[in-house]
Length: 413
Image 1 (cartoon, rainbow, N blue to C red):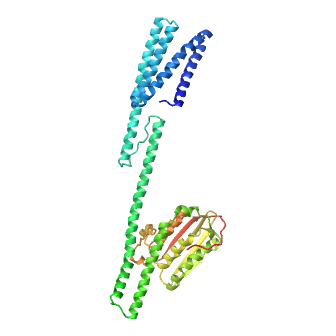
Image 2: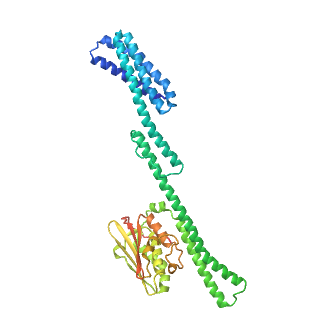
Image 3: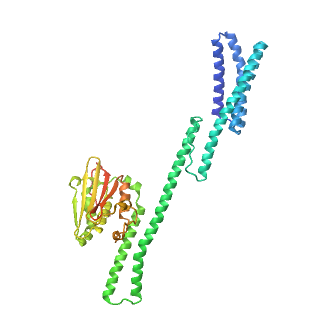
């Protein structure tokens, strides 16, 4: 059934047409009585037009576009011819004039139907193209696009919407595939890194349980190795848990800020024992940014970067933490005099569990740099690695500088 809005719109169009007819008659010099008679004659014509359109609408909605357009053109022409016939008979127009006008109306009917067929064919071609594109998308071909149809702004807007949806689907599928590949790589790497300490633990426990090793010096040595293996497992599990639980949206919403000197102090305290055991000098140069306000999570980033530098810097080397700030940006860099990284390996240093060569494997979990990058990304910054083999590496973190006052508060581990 026709809704009230559509019905009222149809009546309004009919009334507007009748009013236009009266205005044309007035402009042509018709007298008041002639205009009144014409208005009376237009009332049944208006009623017939509204009734015919109301009856035809539900039928036309179920018809194909071509038939709908042609039927609409024919209906308009038939109504025009019927109104002309009624007005001619009631106004006593001569038969010759009525015949002439009737022929012109018939010509208009043919021309209208022809134009309607041409327009319907063009619209059907555009709709078929849209349907084909949608069907190919449904079959998994996400590279297909409808493009510009050239058959009116509405269909072009629909084509742009369909193409935009296809583009989003393509990007989403690529992200899903990339995430799945990363997940498989992560599981493979985790399995590999778990296998070594677990195999060592199992071998040593079996040796002790089978009484293969009983002398106190060997038992102490085995206990030390078992503690080392358990420590490696703890570090790996902790880093995995933090990497999985890191809430990027939550980090972005955090508003607490602390002075940079507190962040640096906390990070260096976590690495001091390891640096001392290797005889490394850990130095800082942050005078320009001592009181700069930054996120407490930056402490974990610096801790991972410093631990990585200490791990890959030989004894008697130097690790330097440098910071500077300007009005828009805060930069913190960790520089070392270690073994360096090959140029072709720099692009992969932030991948989970990636190690460039056996010399770069060690007690770490292989997740420190990946976790640091994820935190920096969540804070809206960037992290970059620069290195020269045998001369050292530099990891620089750039963050938008915040003018929020720094608060003296404990930094979470």
